[in-house]
Image (tube, rainbow, N blue to C red; front, side, top):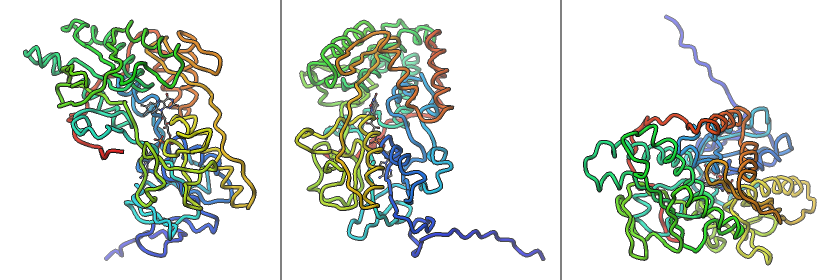
Amino acid sequence: MKEKQTHSIKLESTCKITDEICLPDTKLPRVVIVGGGFAGLALVEKLKHKEVQVVLLDKNNFHQFQPLLYQVATSALEPDSIVFPFRKQINGYKNVFFRLAEVEEIQPDSNTILTNKGSISYDYLVLATGTTTNFFGMDSVAENSLGMKDIRDSLNIRHMMLQNLEQAAITCDDEERDALTNFVIVGGGPAGVEMAGALAEFCKYILPKDYPEYPSSIMNIYLIEAIDELLSTMSDKASSKTLKYLEDLNVKVLLNEAVSNYDGKEVTIKSGKTILAKNLIWTAGVKGQFPKGIDEKHVVKGNRLKTDSFLMVEGYKNIFAIGDIAAVITEETPKGHPQVAQTAIQQGKYLGNVLLKIIKDKGVNPFEYKDKGSLATVGKRKAVADLGKFKFAGYFAWLLWSIVHLLSISGFRNRLMVGFNWAVSYFTYEKSNRLIIRNFKPKPSVNNTKK
Ligand SMILES: Cc1cc2nc3c(=O)[nH]c(=O)nc-3n(C[C@H](O)[C@H](O)[C@H](O)COP(=O)(O)OP(=O)(O)OC[C@H]3O[C@@H](n4cnc5c(N)ncnc54)[C@H](O)[C@@H]3O)c2cc1C
C-alpha cells in the first residue's frame, strides 16, 4: 500500500497562540497599517525596504481609485481598471506583508488588534480606514438608495440602472416607466456632480442608440443639493460654471433642497415636493469608520479621530490616524484637513518619515498640508479647476483633470486600460459594455447610526 505524502511547510513565524495571524519573526519594530487606501498605500511606499516590519491589513485584497467610481457606475470603465491588488503593489517589498482581514477591535492596553481572522500585536498602529456613506440617520433612504463608496456600490448602481432601463421597456404602466427612468442624485459635491454629468451623457449619447424605443426625454436626471451652490469647497466661479454645464446637459439641479424620505419609488423633499424615481444615488455625506476600542472622547464631528499635528491619536502613544479618518485639529485647522486624496497621500508620506524618526529617537516636525488645488469634471471636455490664484473652466481644465487622474491610477496596465477607454470614448462617444451579469436587488447595507 502506498504511503500518503504530506507536504508540510513550516513558516518562520511569531505565532505563539493558535488564533494569532501568522507572520515572519523579523525582530524589527512592527508597524501595522489598517487600510490600503490612498493614505495606507502612501505609508507603505515610504516604509518599504526600511528597518521595520510592515503589516498591511485590509478587508479587500485590492486598492480602489474612488475618484473614478462614477465611471464604473455609468459603464464608462470596467471595474478592474480602477482597482489594483495589494500583493502586486508590494511585490518585491521584503519587509512588507499583506493579510486579508477585517479589523474588529483594538486593545491598546496590550498593543493588540483583533481581526475576523485572528489577532496581531503591534509596536505602532496606523488607522487608515477611511469613511463610509453617511445617511444622517434617515433609515428609509439608507435602505432604498445606493451609496457610491466602493467598487461594489458602483457595480450595484450600474446594474440597478441597466435593469431599470430594461424593465421600463417591458412595463405598460406609464407611472412605473417614469419611476424606472428617473434618476435622483443627492449631494452637489464632486462625486454627485461628476455622476450627474456622466449620466446626462449616457442619456444623450447611449440611450438613443441602445434604446431606440424611447425618446431621450424619457430619462430625467435630478441633482439635489441642500445649500445654495454646487461644489461648495471650490471657488464661486467653479460653482456657477458647474451649474451651467449641468443645466446645458439637461440635468435638473435643485439647490436649497434636501431629501427627507425615500420609499424606493418616491423621493420626498423637505419643501414638500415629490419625485417618482426608482434610482436614487446618495453622495451627500460620509462619516469615519474605524474598529471599536478607541475611547469615544477622542472621536470628533464626522466620526473622525482627533489627532495632534504629528498624526498621533489623542490619548495614545503609539496609535496614529491618517487620511479621511484623521482630524488634525489645530488653531489653523479647527475642522481638520479636507477629506480628499491629496490629504491622505501627504499624511501617509509624512507619517512614514515620522515613524522612522521616532524609532531612531530623532525629533520630528508637525504635519503641514500643501493644497495643490481642486478639479472636477462635468461630462466630456468640460471641467472646472481651482489652482491657487488660477481658476479656469472648460476644455483645458478637462484635459488637466484627465492627465492628473490618469497619472494617479495605480498600475501601468490600469493606466493603459483607462487611457485607451477614454481615447475611444473621446472620438466615438461609446462606453464600455453594458452587460447585466448579476441580478441586483437593493438591500439595507449600512450601519446607519446618527453622528
Ligand atoms: C465617489 C468618490 C469620489 C471622490 N473623488 C475624489 C476626487 O476627485 N479627488 C479627491 O481628491 N478625492 C476624491 N474622493 C475622496 C478620496 O477618495 C478620499 O479622500 C480618499 O480615498 C481617502 O483615502 P483613505 O486612505 O483615507 O481612505 P480610503 O481610500 O477610503 O481607504 C480605506 C481602506 O480601509 C479599508 N478598511 C476600512 N475599514 C477596515 C477594517 N475595519 N479592516 C480592514 N480594512 C478596512 C478599506 O477596505 C479601504 O481599502 C472621492 C471619494 C469618493 C467616494
